[in-house]
Image 1 (tube, helix red, strand yellow):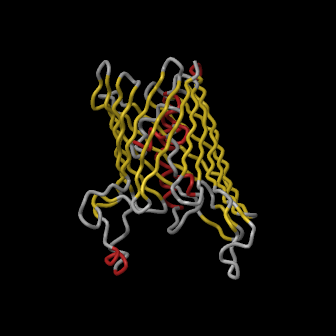
Image 2 (cartoon, helix red, strand yellow):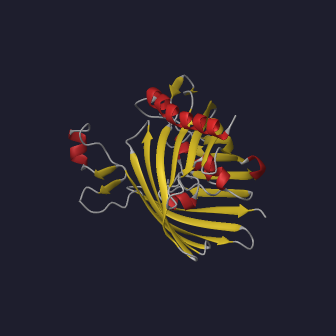
Image 3 (spheres, one colour):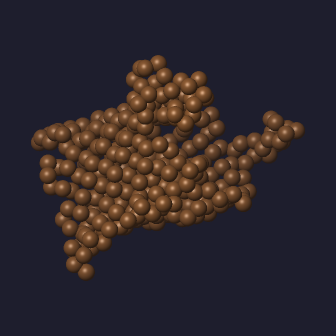
Length: 341
């Protein structure tokens, strides 16, 4: 096939699959929601507005179509200890291998969300019967990206998913399909992604849908000089288990060595008071990431801050983020990246 034919196929996939997702979207709670946790401290600091940037190993998660933007073999590792009091931890590891002779790239990743031992409680023994159990979520994925033209690429990931709760488990699979387009006009980039597209999973006898999401994003360098860069990412999301969100993020880089980042997620203008929400849930939905809180003040929920260092001489990337969630406070996270020479 010619490049133009591949381009047409990729564009058709990008336009058709969203319709399939919306047609199968289910109202209600989804399962395996650990698949929605951002895996990169760099991206999380930008409120996950990373879809149209996708230029490091975290593209395995955010947009596999961007893997062809990576010039060297690269690894990423992230660990998060959530402030839950239950010992909930999250780990992600991934690796990318560029295939420039084919205009392609391949990669693999693993994700795990797990708890410490928790006591088994019963009605008669509410403080525990001496036994313990764990809850564990796990996913493994392989990814592939292909450059169809010098500006347009497509990519996808296939995931194996497993959820364990004590002695019970649920198994499933899903795919991500993404596109990446460098317009060539003032550094403007456009990208789309369908994530977690797959059949329902089943825990014991209860089926549940996957947390599917359709995303559309743009990114542009607001400033580009010899020694500094300011990039903005803007992303809209349409999940099947929540209201739409807008993600806005910024990254300032000095000599591509030291970075500062800021971001904000938004899914509503103003959060309703508890009384209003209880009285009229339909007209006053709860906004997790509003612009203003119940008191009319700027809401910090969904805000994130961070920075990073790229020690080019040894190929090491270190990124840090502090992200906030209303009522749950905030948490710190670190990511390590390694670029192989």
